[in-house]
Amino acid sequence: MEQAIRQATQADLVEPSVPGISWAAVLAGAVASLALTLVLISFGAGMGFSVVSPWGNSGVSASTFKIGTGLYFIVMAMISSAIGGYLAGRLRTKWLGVQTTEVHFRDTAHGFLAWAAASVLGAVLLASPASSLIGGTLSGATQAAANSAQSSPMDGYVDRLLRSDNPSAQGQQNPSDARGEMVRLFTSSFHNGNDLNPADRTYVAKVVSTRTGLSQADAEKRVNDVVTQVKADLDAARKAAMQIAIWLTLSLFIGAFSASLAATEGGGLRDGTWGKKAYGTPAINR
Image (cartoon, rainbow, N blue to C red; front, side, top):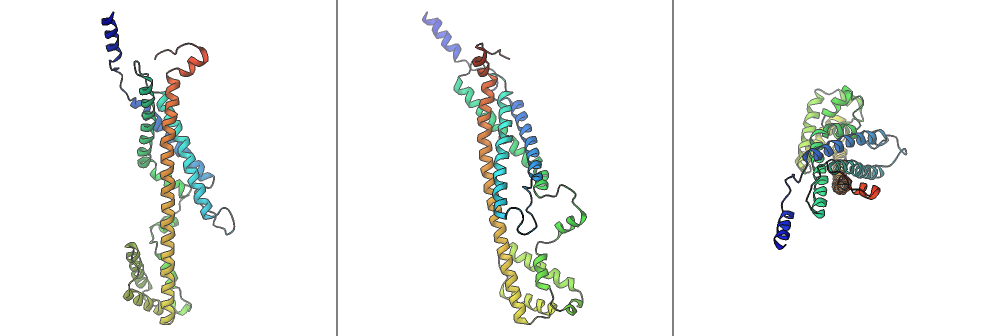
């Protein structure tokens, strides 16, 4: 009798031969999550979550736009990750002879792996389409827009510096040479996080004075005003990038939790928990 009990106990301790991870189910959930993410990105772009109205006092403000877009990122991550995780848990093979706690852990791992695979593949495959949709450039990017995208971001500031109050000052020889030099000077200075040094400020003021006909004092004032505007715009862009990064990080965490939770629900239904409650009969092992 004791030997039979010992043999039964040893049989219960035998590790099942079925692998603990069903990679086919994980990849299926990841692909479904990626596809749904692309659909939701398209829907968000169509609903206006990609652009702010160019008209003053029309539409939402920039702050409201950023908050709304961040919340939509979270909702999008919850929906796509939950469906992907549910499919990963529901489509995995059934483990026989595995304790309930271990099954729960494996289901959670399946959901997490489906989310991880979707995140990695999405960063590689959906980066270009998503950026195009979010940037509002999917519908009909023209050649003028392409040329504008290739120009330096400092061109606008140089335009303000070289704007002339006297139209006759526009007829100088080779204006593009000074303009290109100014663009390179501004780009190199602010790209490194530095301000224009005093020598560069004096030189820039002289160029502005020559091109626009302003006095040296007025040219220096214009240079200082534009430099201050550049700093303010760069700081605003830095803060906006930080906020978007925080929203994306939060959406990723919530997506991972949603996928893991949905996978446990799908795995429970896969093992026949719903069928036992509804019909009172054990589920058929497949």
